[in-house]
Length: 105
Image 1 (cartoon, helix red, strand yellow):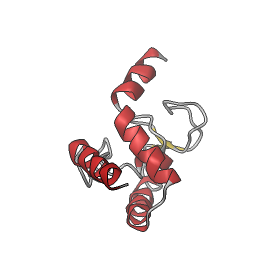
Image 2 (cartoon, one colour):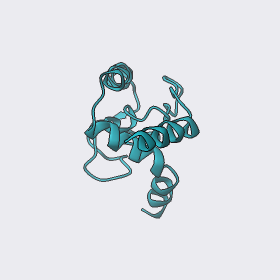
Image 3 (cartoon, rainbow, N blue to C red):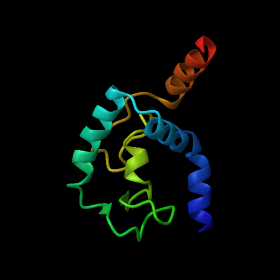
């Protein structure tokens, strides 16, 4: 449990990015998430039961990193721990984009 909490804390920005992109859906992000999900559903590391999920009840998740696929596939700065798909942006680029959007609103 403590290891999961530490891992979640370290990845909080990517998790929040996935949550935000799941709530405020954008077509281009949904296309990326769909493409990534197509890879994940065929992956031997997918956990449909939730036994390896970092947070209970967030399955399907990745058994390698414990991330909810619903959120991880929508985090543009995240990548597959096994290298099956890569990040589209870095966390720093994503932060700059968010800051730019916030300044214009």
